[in-house]
Image 1 (cartoon, rainbow, N blue to C red):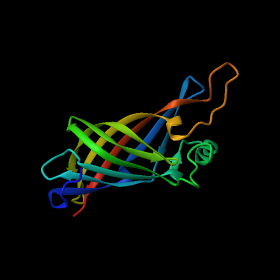
Image 2: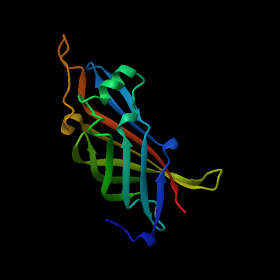
Image 3: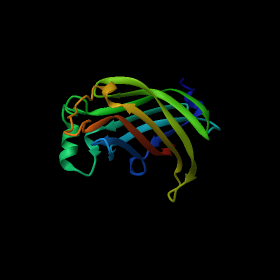
Image 4: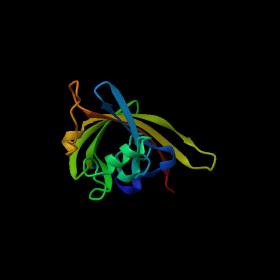
Length: 181
């Protein structure tokens, strides 16, 4: 899948303008939202295109934030992310298809020691030159995973039936990257 480095632009993800967020069901009727702030990576775009050819992202699992310190601590524990054993999550693209209007980016998502193929429903959001002369590109993407596929099986039954946490987790990405000169 690699394009010759002479024929592609290299962009570094800008963590200050990038969000990796997740949404999970809580108590069977509401949603809990969280985010990871420690995001880094590279996006390669063939010369003359807006469609990436390769994407490589690393997320610092310890940066999970749900605005609830006790829940964040539980998410970092062996019941969930187990950041002592698995400090990073990664995404490595394996194929990119479609056009800038609608991209399908398939890749290997690895966390909690498990790697599974996922498909990101992606949109190219545009390009601009910032106030400092840096060329930037932006993408938005979504996918849904089953947390149990990654070994995140902790749950607790509710008195009225059901469980505390749903299995499906929606992931929403808003990525901005800076051209490397």
